[in-house]
Picture 1 (cartoon, rainbow, N blue to C red):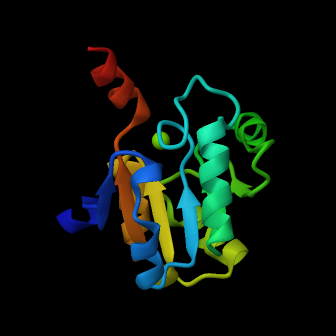
Picture 2 (picture 1 turned 90 degrees about the horizontal axis):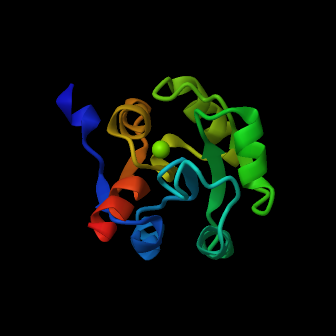
Picture 3 (picture 1 turned 60 degrees about the vertical axis):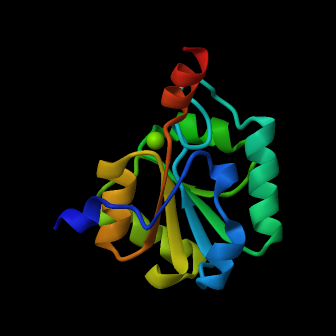
Length: 148
Ligand SMILES: [Mg+2]
């Protein structure tokens, strides 16, 4: 039971994730959280760093799907410059949206990684469906420590 709360991998930021390691482990699809994973909650649109990183992972051949518990309005505005598939109001850690994301990306659970900042939604949800799970440090925490 408890192991469902442990990520397979941890990174400070999404940009620090070893993408070659994911390729070697046959990961083909990435499920992405938005808030505090890609940008802080108060940032409405994808920033330059996010746009560049998404561009890089897609060029490497990864399929990408945003799975967010946020509203449709929030997710559409954020996705405006990215144009990736997305599921809003995902009710993570419910399995339903993760399964739907796999259908969209046409990946199996063993080929799919969940990237998020929350243990009880992103990591627990991903582990429940046997995906590879990656926990990043929540951006607001990082900003807090940096400004300290
Ligand atoms: Mg989050």
